[in-house]
Amino acid sequence: MNAVTGPAGLPVAILGAGPIGLAAAAHCAARGLPFVVIEAGADVGAHVRDWGHVRLFSPWRYDIDEAARRLLARAGWVAPDPDALPTGAELADRYLAPLADALAAHGRIETGARVVAVTRAGLDKVRSARREQAPFRIDVAHADGRRTRLTARAVVDATGTWSTPNPLGGSGVPALGEAEAAGRIAYRIPDPLGRDRALHAGARTLVIGAGHSAANAVIDLADLAAETGAGTVAWAIRGARPIRAFGGGAGDELPARGALGERLRALVSEGRVRLETGFLATSVREDGDGGLVVDGEDGRAIGPFDRIVALTGQRPELGFLRELRIDLDPWLECARALAGDIDPNVHACGSVSPHGHAALAHPERGFYVVGAKSYGRAPTFLLMTGYEQVRSVVAALAGALEEADRVELTLPKTGVCTTDLADGSVACCAPAPEGARGCCGGERSADAVPIASPAPATAGGCCGAAA
Image (cartoon, rainbow, N blue to C red; front, side, top):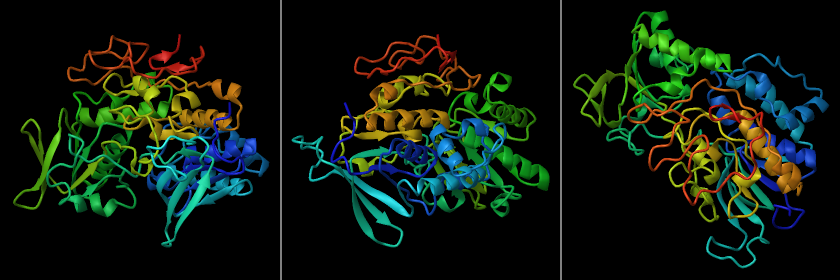
């Protein structure tokens, strides 16, 4: 059965021109499916360029989609050293930009075009009659002020979550005073050794967040303080232990990721970075001298600070999908079938069972959410996961269901397999706490959707190699 709806001559609409969106386009090109890519940024890879100064912990061999590699090779592209670690800017300049050029002969890429709504033509969310036969309509706002509407036979949402960061408030909503202090709060990874040097040199800076983005920020800020001999760095996390940021050290199959955590651990142990654990921000206020003080749920007040960097994760933008029938996990806002593997309440492994179109499908036939957005609010998404997602999804859209169902993915182990629950004592493969979802084959709730494709023996499971 073909997963595409609507007239066969219509294109597949791919939302987002980041690594996963362009990989989806490359797979469409390989199968002869017409496509249009819609990107809100001024150029492809806009989100990646936003953290262009940051070096990936995965080498080039893990960063290039295979369909994209084949397309680029036919255009004479020379692949980078597979063992080198690119920065975000290098990923965009040396891979995404040439890929967009190569794709131009096969489909259309529109930049400076923001999707404001995706609907079924002539149908709101309620109406069911002939729904699957109706094409999708995508309303687009262009940077030059134009508004256009295009029609598609399928939609692949690869918009990611980078443009919708979480607030620093510990309850998921902005802390009191956060909006008023917005001019001194950054929600992106700063570049204190480069473009943001003047903002942070000699400053008292607080970083809030426990992931790899926060780790990079803390390390660069500490390096700036050491270089200038001025300024301080504080780091606050909501959990009891910085497990994900410290990582698995030598046990990580991505050495750069392990080294990042080890460096961060050393900065804390040497006293160069002050770590506050179990801190849930409730308000931001100015003290008598104009410094920012952050109050916590437990009555603690930390500060004063000159600047705050809030790297508390991202969340998916769902507003433009309001008129579609989508089925998401109620608390992660991810593809429901993935929730048991990626729920950070249960584990910090950063791995997920191999999955493809069946796990990513929604009640709205022909609509898929892929890439980081498929994880919703959960962290630690890897490019390799997204590339396998879109390979399977595009195969399904082309009607090649046998290929779409054959999902193969081997992820590098993190060396981390513990949770950061309240008491910090539950291991990833231990029985899940009551009310939580299992990580490695534990019980799931009765209404959970099972992952259709079994993991092959070589797949990287949540706790290492799958059985």
